[in-house]
Length: 311
Image (cartoon, rainbow, N blue to C red; front, side, top):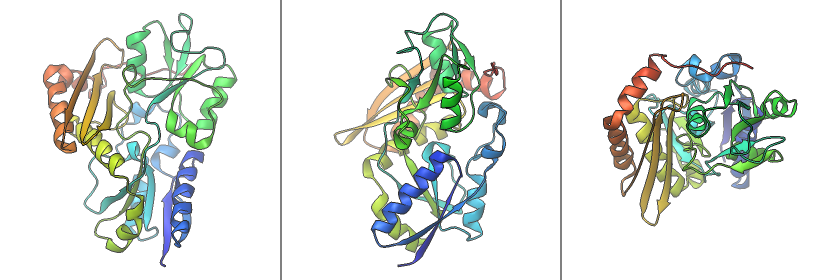
């Protein structure tokens, strides 16, 4: 069996994900080793993600390692992967998906509804900020960067009354003690690809693609392809206020999507069903654009919005 070199970011969650894939490969008899690579997103920690505005900020350096043949595959949170990969790369596998929803975490409060007026909530996601502000415009939203441990530590120390994190990361790390409420997708539409892992390889590397084929989950591939088709049509990355949540319903896919203004004053939602993941994603994107999503996104991309401020 060939030796497989895995490229990964060095955060606790990224390492969990890479080690998880490594264990699955070893169970198939492969030899796997890990190379930790620091990305642009890891180096810039004091600026809200939306302000950085760099597509591929968590993947660029790892892709360089693939091109230079220093690694054979890269393990990413799929939501961090740009919707259009460079011609040098392909996604060989999308793994069985964890819960894609967001989670409300707090020391004192049981839910978003239970937060007092003017409560301080931490998130650097404009998507989460917009949906929070739509139901609780009184809340004070503050920037929150860092790995899961750092964010939870800031919550526990009293910097925030609550923070919003992805259920998938908390579940994978076993850090659900402060998770009070799994937020329904109807209230907070997740990010496209949230909860899924994407395994990236060099384009045309048939040997590695075949070795990884057992990791590819058909349902996860279909639903995330649909979500990413919508995101691509809207021209967005993971830092803009766009949400997409697809579910396999029998042989069909149901896609619920959102385009929102960061201040929560304009929220556009659309839900449709279809058979073709890409066609459905693009169709829902077109509907959202025609309903005013184009105006909202133009304003966001033009930086005509208020970013979360540090507390």
